[in-house]
Image 1 (cartoon, rainbow, N blue to C red):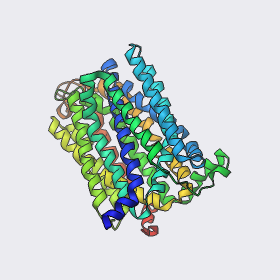
Image 2: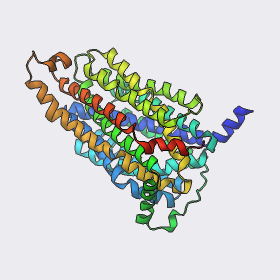
Image 3: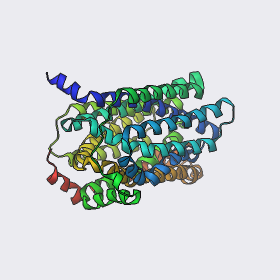
Image 4: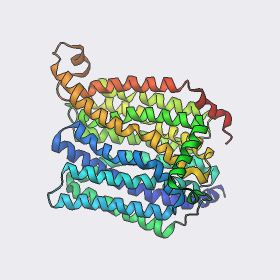
Length: 432
């Protein structure tokens, strides 16, 4: 009887979650294939990082207004339109690749347009999850969303690498478009999305956008934990920018190594997601969030920096990512349970702007630091230097040095925010 109640109560959410997760897998495979294509074309960490900068810049710049629009627009229609326009951008990439005209500049423009569509789509999708999920299943839904994210991280590098080698960029993009069709038709035909009780349509867009910021200014605990994540995202995005330059150039590296490390990250997140879905509510969600982030920051970066073989990298990847789904599930409950559903589009959009503005900055910094600072520095140092002892020689040793810096930066960030009394104050207010 419990199983029937569980499945019945979550059935609409499960349909939306499973089909959107499949579409996200296809999109992630395309993004990974484009990273391989761009690094093979230029061999530059900055060139590759700019793909993500172009995706995130419009997302950060426009998120706060997108939330206001999301609260006044029909959520289902918004998701359908945004997904369709993003798919058209992918079709443009396919057409350019097929005619031999694809350039990096095209990818930057297409990524910016896709990022803009995601800016509007994500607040609508976040509210849709709330509308489709009974309150008692919030943590389980958060765990399932982390599960799909984990599977995506585990499968997309391996599947994209294999499909890219077998069928080229065309094969990866065609798979992406097929998954889009499944998600689009499921949302159109199978999901009856209830409308929230918000009044965002009565406010001008600018005033609506300010509503989310005013809410966060009042809720200092929520605001500070968002800023905590923003600081972590700065380190994480520099990590993402530098990883191809490290993994593709070391003697034990290459496309296989990059795909394997990212797949291990996904497997670790899968294990963490299963734990997040099955574990009971912890006594202290804030403590879980802080401990999981400290584990992530104090392990993988150091293993990537100092490890001299692929197994050490994989161990670091597993330790670095296993706690992230548990952190995300607890963070999702803390925020979703506090923000009134009629404000969630605007508040989540304000959160996205504050929490994710460091991502394009981090990608840009990571690419610049690898290409302009750490790799030239490593090339100038002699064979008897401490640098060579720690990181070896040749291309990629500079990126390894950057990962050591990122490890210390991440740990320091966790220790500083762990002392924030406003974040710990969330425990006093938490009632579920």
